[in-house]
Amino acid sequence: MNRKYMFIDIIALVIAILWGGIYFIGLNFLDFEVSFNNFLLGMGAPLLLWFFGFKAKTKKGTHHNFEINIVKEIVYIVLFAGMVVFMLFFSSSLHFFNVEHRKTDINKEMEVYIATVDNLFPTYDNYATTRIEKYKQDLEVAIKSKDIDTKNYNTKDFVSSLDDQKNIEIKVLHLKEMLFPKEYDSLKNVFNKTVDEIRNIKFYNIRSLVYMPNFIKENEYQCDKMLTYLKDISGRSRKGEENFEEFEYEINKHSVERYFTDNTRNYAWWIYLFAGIACFMMFLPYMLTNRSSKLYKN
Image (cartoon, rainbow, N blue to C red; front, side, top):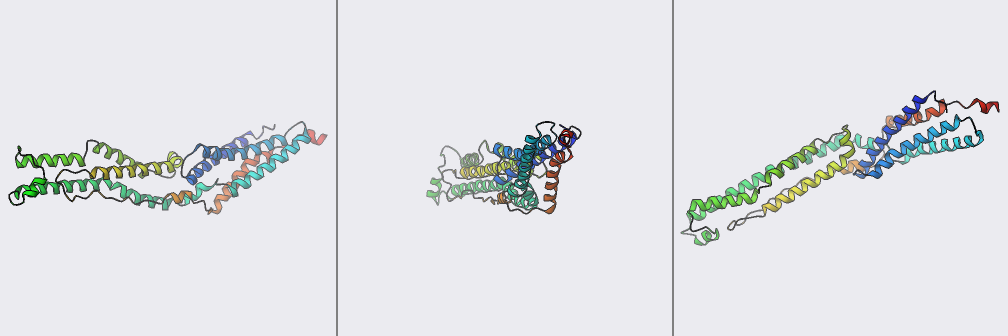
């Protein structure tokens, strides 16, 4: 084997690994999830391309069994060419650049989504506080008019052994505990961290790039789960609290997934140029390898 240009082999291998990373991330975007199969295909295809070029080089520089190795060399060259065609025109090896091109649209859509989820707890706080205040006012009205509207007074289920003010305080406190249960503050903090995670999803952060689809889906699930929780606790009520409305809130569902999964080929010319250069660099070791002088002597 001709080791004169070994550093070219290393460069070619590094290019294959980098392309594999881009392919892997692109497949994650396309499926909108991270999977081991994507890793195998994403890393495997460029490494296989490099392997075919490397094997063609070793067969070209062989010092024995020339007839057999020339046939093998041709086979590896054909396989290399076939992989180039597959990688450039029939695979999703460049899909990452599709999504990268749409990052402005993705960020805009995510900003709208974040604005709605960011306002979820403040809106609920306002809802619950308003409802508690209304309940307190209803209790006060019932007490003031108990001699006129006895029926309304009785529906409030006041404790006769307590004075009016104490009855109001206890009932308002109980409703507050229902609408703001013990776990409320801790869940609110967890939710705010979730929103911050969504807000911090950025391109060109390696961890975010790899796991971006999972981040988005998981955090969206957590937001929906929290909205369901708030609606559930808003359904709790004290006896005598009539005509209350449960908490209603709509999180604007983003359609950001379509920017990731749309595989329409719309690559800029320079992407194909760099991909072509990458293929050329992986074939360069073969081109620089000299045939054994023994072949010509024979």
